[in-house]
Image 1 (cartoon, rainbow, N blue to C red):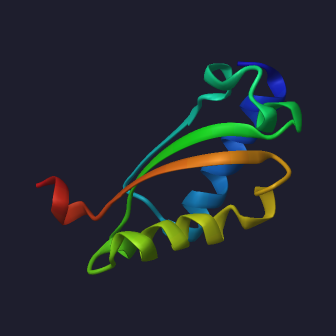
Image 2 (cartoon, one colour; image 1 turned 180 degrees about the vertical axis):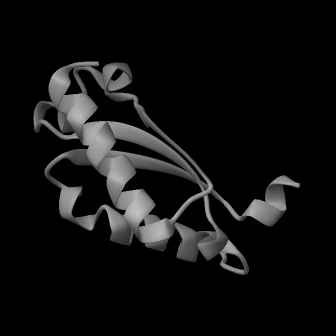
Length: 94
C-alpha cells in the first residue's frame, strides 16, 4: 500500500471511530484489485470497511450504511471511489 492510500485508510478509520465509536473496526484498501478500472484513474480508491458499533443496534442495513457514508462523506468522490461496508451490531456477534 502506498503512502497516499495508507493515509486514506487511517483517515477513514479516524472518521468512523469519531462518528460510530466502534468496538471493532477494519479498513482495507482494495484499490490494487481494481487497477485499470475507470474509477481508479480518477485517483479515488476502493475500500472495504467492517464496523461493529452499538449505533447499529435496531438499525436496518440501509441505515447502517447511511451512518457509515455520512461519516466519510467528505472523502467520497475525491479520495473514495468505491466503499464496501460490513456493519454489525455487537449483539449479532454473540
